[in-house]
Each structure stands twice: as C-alpha cells, then as structure tokens.
Amino acid sequence: MSRPHAIATRAFGHWSLLKAAALALACAAAPAVAQDVLVIRGVSIHGRFSGGPDIDKGIVIIRDGKIAAVGGMDLAVPRGATIIELEGGSVTPGLIDACALLEPTDRITAEARGGRPRQPTPPPPDFTTEHDEHDGHDHGDAATGDPLAAPILTWVEEPVDAGGLACCALDTCAMAAMHEFLGEGTICPTCGQVILSEEEHALYASGLAPRSSLVESSSEVVPHTLVIDTINFRSPDFDRLVRGGVTTVFAAPDSAAVIGPRGAVIRTAGPMNTRVLNDAADVTASFGSDSFRVGPGNQSPFGSFVSNRTRRPNSRMGVAWVFRKAFYDAEKGLAGHAVTGADAPPAEAYELLGSIRAGQTPLRLKARLQRDIEAAVRLAGEFGLSFTLVEATEAYKCLPTIVNAKAPVIFGPIYVDPNGVRAFSEETRESRLSTVAMLFDAGAETALTAMDLREEDGLARQAMYAMRSGVSFENALKAVTLTPAKMLGVADQAGSIEVGKRGDVVVWSGRPFEATSRPVAVVMDGKVVHDAR
Image 1 (cartoon, one colour):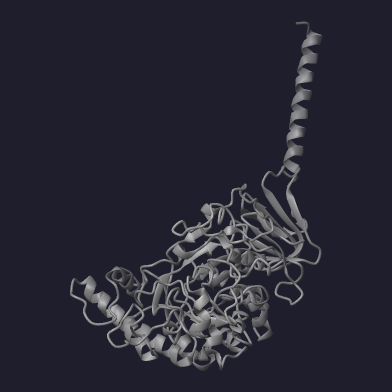
Image 2: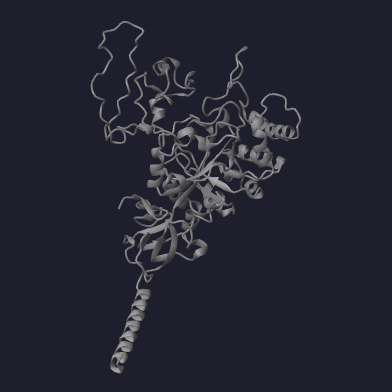
C-alpha cells in the first residue's frame, strides 16, 4: 500500500470513529423510544406522601406497568410514549376500598342501562301431553344475538307484576308468582329471600339487594369458607367501581353470620390472572342485629319443626354467646376434646378460629352502635384478639374505648339517609357526619369505605363528605389510598405515587374530591382501563 493511501485510510477510520462517538452521545442525550410507556403530563400530583410533597404541575411516567419517574415539567419524556395531558387536571393513586360489598349479578335491568331486554329462553315442549306436532316448536334458524341486550352473564329478568311485590331472587325463584300472597317482609320458602315492595327496591344503591345474603347459612360460624368463591369477575359492578376511580378492593362478606367467611383482596380490572392479590384474607365477625336479620334470618323452634335457620342468635345476647362459644369450642376441639352443646361451630372452623386467636389470621369486628362496639372490644380482650373495627357508626360515643384498644377503623359509609341493609336497621338513627373527623382528631388509624354504595355515593364521594365534615384533604386522600393499602397488606405495591409501585393512578378533571371533579382516566398497570376524556 502506498504511503498516501495508508494515510487516507487511517484518516477515514478516525473520521468513522468520531461519527460513531458523536452518534452515541446524541442517542444518550435524546429520550429513548418508548415501547410500553404512559406519560401523564401537566397535572397536579397528589398522594406522594413519604415520597415527597405534592407537585402543582408535573409529570408521572409509567413504564412496563410500574411508576418509573415523578417530577416537574422539566422531566424528560421518552419519545413515542402514550401521553395523557390535561390542563387543570390532577392525578392521585388509584383508590382502595377496604371493605367493599360486591354484587355477583346485575340487578339493574337492561332498560335502565339503555339496552333492550334479552328474551328469556322458552321452556322445552311438554311431550307428556297431547299437542299438535308444530305447537311449541321452532323449526327456523336460531335467533341471532342482540348487541344491545344485556350480557347473558349479568342478565336478570324484569320482575313480574305481583301486586307491587318482588323477590330478591326473582330470576331463579320457582315461586315468584306466589310472592303476592306471601306478603311484604316475609321470607320466600323456595329462594329464602325477603319479599320486598317496589319502594324498597328503589333503595338499591348499586343493584345490591337489601337483606339478601351469599354467606353460608348452615352455621353462624363459617370462617373456613371464602368470599372469593362468590365473586363474579365479569359483574358490571366492577365497571362501576373502575369508573369511580377504585382500583383495588377488599371483597367483604355480608353480615349474615356471627363469624363470617374470609374476604379477598382483588383488583377491579386487568388480566384475570393478575386480579386476585389475596384469596384468603381477613375474617369478619358481626355484632349487633345483622347476624339474625340479614338474609333468610334466624327463627325460633316451631313445635317439632326445625331447620338450619332454627338457631341462635336471635338477640344481642345470643351474638355474644355464639362468638364466645366458638373460640372456647375451637380450643377444646383442637386439643382433642369432645365439643358438645348447641351452637357448636363446625369442626372445619376450628383451625381458622385457632389461627385468629394466635394472631395469624386478621380479624375484623363489624359494629355500629356504641353498645355493640364496646361488646366487641370486650370480647376481643377476653381472648386477646387483635382486630380492625368496621363501620363504627356511633364511634363518637366511645372514642376512648376505640383508641385504648389500638384498633384501626374502617369507617363508613357516610350518609344522610341510610339505604340498603342499613335502611332496615335501627342502628343508624344516631349517626353523625362529624364522626369521621373525630376519629382522625383522636388519633385512630382510619380508612374510608363506601361498602355497597356506588356512583354519587361511591368512595370518591366518601372522601368528599369526610372533607366537608372537617377532615383535611391529605387525610381524606390517605384514607382511600395508603391507609387501606396498609390494612390490606399491599402498601408495597399500591396506595401512593412512588417510583417502583404499580402504575395504578386516577386522572381527575380538577382537584380530587371536589363536587365538580370526576375521574376522566383510570390507569392500572400503566394501561388505561377507563377513559372519559
């Protein structure tokens, strides 16, 4: 090779290296191309808590389902990211309801949702009687599906006209036509539900039937059963929760048993295999009148006729008896001794009762009235039980008792006029809107719940009601995000906007919990699951 040619070759090589270095520096300086990145920009950021103060106008970057960065408007945004930009909007962590009652089917009709009713499937022809060979047959093609009709999984037929009365289980009850003669307030012997008037049906908050129950009714002590077995993950109730900004819930049992099933911690949307976070969580015990008034109800013996409803409790004294006896019987049973007497819990419950007593399985005590709260605290103290207090309507009457017990409180729902099962209870007559603020002022760890309420009275509105009663914005936000996340054992995953946590956030049209503000986008794992922009 000639010398000039060699010099030219070396110069060209140096030039190539310089170009490569410059290109590498440019790539490092420019934002990376985003494949699975969601950016929420130009919004006020609330709910960082220990991660830092609120940001008046900033950016949240979610990458691969996790919060990757939080900062001001100078934060670098990756190229190609999906961007949600909302001037005057705000973002918070996804809301968490620590005690949600979920409906397994949709009791709101297709017409009420704007669709057309699906025609019921005709019964098969009766070949035991003489009939024309064409009667009762359909020799044509199968009817095509109606896209506006309610989904099969959630459809419930319109109640038949039965003198203004309807049964909570009218879609499956064989005696629906006889409910007119049973009378309002009685129990249908076929479906076991209470006959309700049309006015009572209007009290539904989200389609949940007052006084109906899904809890196993063969015993008053059923902690070995699971709420997860009743969950319909395709229920439109989850759609209502998502629209309200709720991303995680504790699926609670109803209060038809003294010691009820274990609840579940589940997510309201997303791939089915990611939605169950804990399928066997806290056990809930109910004090007050619910355990003998909700669902079919307990009955006294009638002559020689008894059934699974012929049992205690039929009074508050009976509730305390069943609760106390369950733990003493479990102690005897686990020690190998015979368990005798009425109201004995099933043997399958012994292990769970022992686990509760050992502090291995979390316990919730649901009570509204002062006397029921104090009875629950006293009985928990007798067995050395740690617990979380639920509902606590008259907590303002016994704040020292609650604080001294060091019991966290899941308070709510907040209401002026009770509905659902509470509308039939005398335990709501002395409720106060200021109770939740008094709990915070007393230093009780408090989360808010909407239970069976949705839409206008859902969890976001519960936080708004709390603020109107004197709770600060930060405490109200924490009561529907970080505090319930800690109670449910998911605070490492959710409950605040911090780097490394799940990308579960709510984008609001204005300041969160204002009367004119609403969720316009709900994000779970970095995916938009509700978009109302």
